[in-house]
Image 1: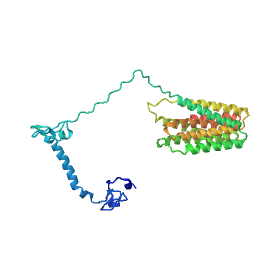
Image 2 (image 1 turned 180 degrees about the vertical axis):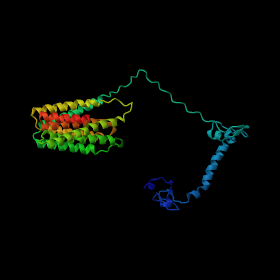
Image 3 (image 1 turned 90 degrees about the horizontal axis):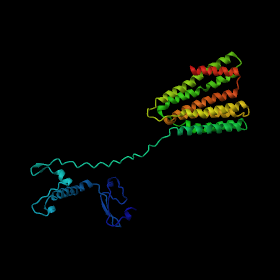
Image 4 (image 1 turned 45 degrees about the vertical axis):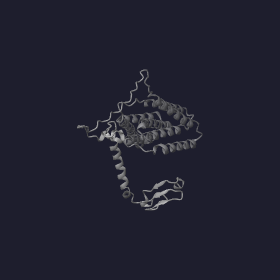
Length: 347
């Protein structure tokens, strides 16, 4: 089709004729002329056919070069003009009037671009490093308030259970399965280790309603050792992430996330003590699970690793609080649990 629309007198040269050709009208080792006057060459021996042509082209260039200095240029018989400004002529000039002229001088370097004067009155742009942390803390507070509000208005346990399943399945499917940077494998394992320390919640269950010394001993051991796991895991994570910090890194304000965490714990405590919101415990447990999963997902990237560690800490704290609120242990049992967890944290 392309050959059919070409003008009369056009020529196609198929260099792939030996392998069958790239043009439909190509005939191997032949020259044909189409009905619309296009000449199609399918020769497979083009290198041997071009020997005379290449010699003619080369000799033509040399003759033009030599004649540029002769009478054909100057129009004066016997006068040969050597143009030093001609790069081809000057580059091949070796001796002139007994003087060595080779090598030719290098061409002058291009002029440097003019330097633009900086505006002295241009004020430097101030970067508010605190703003993204404030925004993140606000969003965390809104999310926490929303989930706690749904727990407060939940009609029954079935609704709370479905809310938990829905929230966790979405977060797990979208965030946690994402790839983790190789450099963050160790901090990720430390955070996972700390969150897995929520086995302390099982120990708290045993201690809250213990009926024998055996149950109390097992609960005390589980609570204490799991707390060592929790605190130690988060400390190791923080130290590992500190290894990636550079002196010129911008300041960080992750402590601001402690504000919504403390507010959520206070709201949960007040609501739980009032006894008016029976499904608040399930909502707090859901939020705790989301924070723990978000902590693991945050370790997938260097930019969110510290936020992940903070999220995991908040999730574990809320998990412990919601467990205590759900069990409603006696003052003696609550004191024992607090003392055991304190001992585990110090250890």
